[in-house]
Length: 597
Image (cartoon, rainbow, N blue to C red; front, side):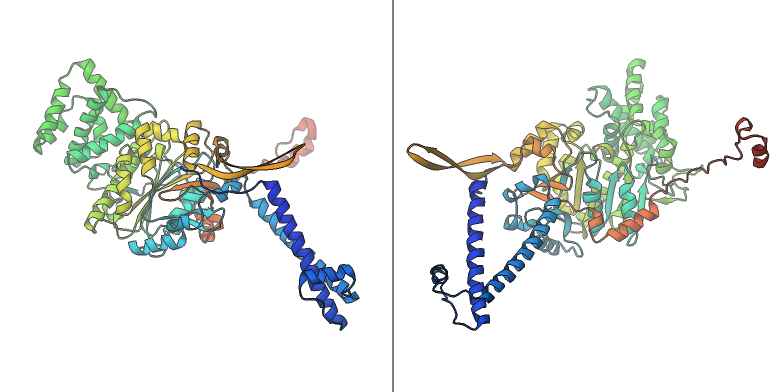
């Protein structure tokens, strides 16, 4: 980024200049006003109108200075002092709200350079897209001007916020509250659910997918992952979610066993879907290895290549076959969890066709303004393969609806993907990210660090998705030097005039030289103040914004009501046993024991 030409003189010189100007204006103006007002009050001839003639006359004694002029001067001095005190109090109050990094704001984006992301610019874009009620997602307020920075309903974003930096309160919750259409929210905590559920359910039904009991939600509905599998291509896509979702972050797949395991899993998913069987059957087939039921189902439906591929795998040497099936079993480990299965398979002895619970349909959801919260957490027992599969199934259903609606959803759908690298391990997202915005699928992906994205997608794909994001937000809390240095380079430099003075026997001299400095160096970005974020947007200079937590916005009361309704209440502490009933006869005597009885 080229340096911006923001030139200025040294701080000390500027202060002296402004102090001199202020003294001349206050002293000269005060004297002029007091002399004229005092002469009028005293009923004598008005002093000269020209300030220089007036000052010269007062000095030489040719212009009278009545007592009333002194009174007027004292009154004006008192008023000036009062105004100065008010300004000082306001300045101190404002300075208490200023962050350390705010001094860099004048060198960053402001005014006309941010026109596409202003309220007016975002509103115009929303009108063009046919969106009413919300111009976009408010990222924050520009520190230097106070104008709102708005991510439009056509812009995709990728955020990097370190732990405990306020991304839920300042980014995720406000975005969900302002969304005009359907919302898909992912997280590994319940705070977003509790804070927005009550608000969203006022306009449309809400779904909470909670296979790991993060929000302690009971499965009164279920989703059948195999309903997504309509052909061999969909079966392969579902397999990819299980493969990437079960892989340890940073590890590399085995060049032989992983593709072979994915191949048999893909065939098993297809066979179970064709046979209208629950997804649990896939796990049983994997562990049994030699079961020929999936082969027979695929034969009946003329999937020749798939069933012959399974037959050839079953005929391999035992050790080789065990390695393939062992890898496949690792990929479907999440299906061993009984609590997880209650969300994706029939319960109570029911079949896929007879389970009476509500069945979640991604295509029906895509045509609604409903909200679904998809919860999971990393580590042992993670349901990431299923949460990823559900998220992608919804996204593809929305893509299909957009294509039937002229290429774009009638109302934009928000995908607030918090904890993207843990909850939704969407391996193909970098390849699909760029075209979602034009279809009305507004993806707001949030990572805790650059490294998280690299672990999930690899360095090249992480760079691809970062570059494709129309809005990139850094919320602080990251200590990765490489990422911060690259971010510092993107933000760029500023130019200024450095004034230096020197003196000697021949006299004094002053020199002026243009210099450049980084707006933010690595340490500035590493210690970015809470409540501040750096925004890089397409076609605009880097911008420093003040984040806007939900409790400072118009939905404050509604969010608090939702939290009070849905957040778990603290358990009551057990009532302590009365001291009398636990009396020790060796200390309190027999009377105390008798009284306790």
